[in-house]
Length: 225
Ligand SMILES: [Zn+2]
Image (cartoon, rainbow, N blue to C red; front, side, top):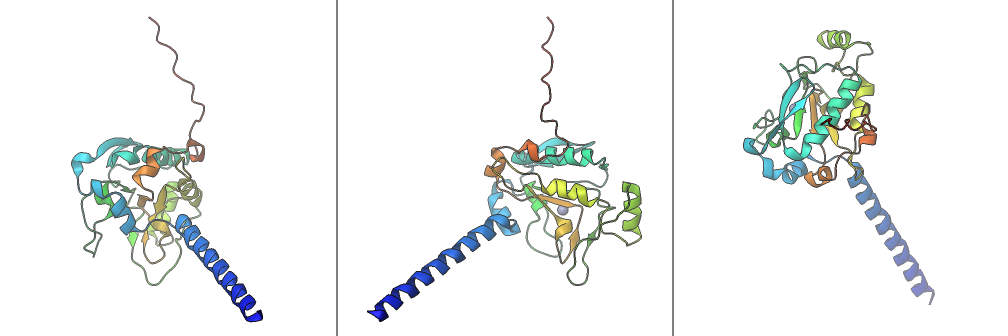
């Protein structure tokens, strides 16, 4: 009798542990960013297919991207403008059918879901070991760019702007962007990628998460005839 009771108690504990573990795995999966491999699968239809891309305005620039991502890049441009961050057309680019440097795998630029912004002042760095990004504490974009040139910072983007970009969510609550500056083993601070599936974006961007977005834009006056 005792033995059976103990046996049932053990089973109960094992079952609860399993449930906890399963919860943690599911929770971690929803909190973690998508792997590049997952994103390639989710956006497979657009791989190196330039005809499927659309050209959209991005600040003063025009960029070529996968159509479901258009509103997301618009939201990103709104946040950059809110922080008075100047986009240079000469060193900003999106769609490009190419492999990741030093790899035979396709870069996410090949799917129209990645954008490099101002790469001269946000250069790719393959550094020793693992470390967080180094921001400049200067007030202006030009001063921060000087810190990058002098090797004192990895990016001319201010941390508050990056926080605001990473806060952008879809209407179904998914974080839209991943930033290459947050990678631990290399720094690719020019690089922003879409971190959700086409289906997530089909539901739209939650404009309440976009700093600088005028939520109550008055509708244009009716035409006089
Ligand atoms: Zn990139």
